[in-house]
Length: 116
Image (cartoon, rainbow, N blue to C red; front, side, top):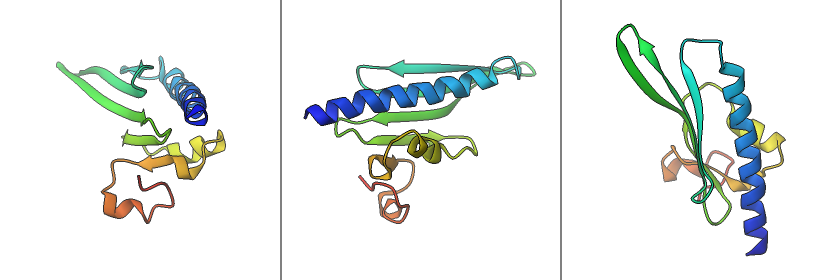
């Protein structure tokens, strides 16, 4: 239990740092606005992109990650070509604690990451 809580805190810190860096790199480089949304109680982390395309407002979730109670990081949305998983691994998160949540459960077993 203590190890899981410690992992959740560590993983949260890593995820927030990575997403914050992502947002910072895009600030003032485009007409869109990128924002990091964090829920430190339920451990959800999102980056959203908002802006106008001509006269139409758009809102898009760029990333959504959820750290569940078992300290597994579920990648629920990655609407980029960035290999977020590689960066998480480089920052010390083992593949066994990363779940590609947007893939069907039957496919996850073949990804090399956690299946649940």
